Amino acid sequence: MGTTAAFKLQDAGFTRQQVEALGEFTDGQAASKTDLTETKSELKADLAAVEHRLELKIAEVKTDVVKWLFGAIIAQTTIIVAAMKLLH
Image (cartoon, rainbow, N blue to C red; front, side, top):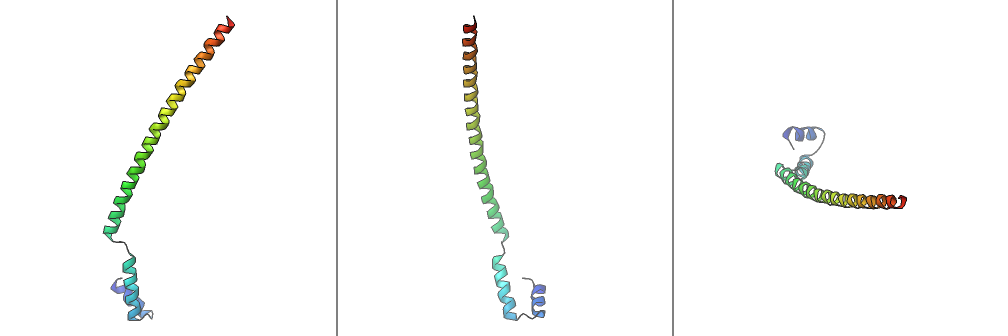
């Protein structure tokens, strides 16, 4: 807590002990630059892991779509050939 804030609290009727206790409490609650840097690094790592899992899942889905597409093409071709044989 800054000196100006402490004086304002004392002017508002806070005792010196109350101002000091409040200052210690708020100082303990504030995140330091190091805390923020560590958290940022952790979030970047987590995001990279999620991105990697998502890319793997997308590749898996693409493979499934291609399999179904070729299966449908083969089934459709078989039906058309069978229908043409029945009509002749």
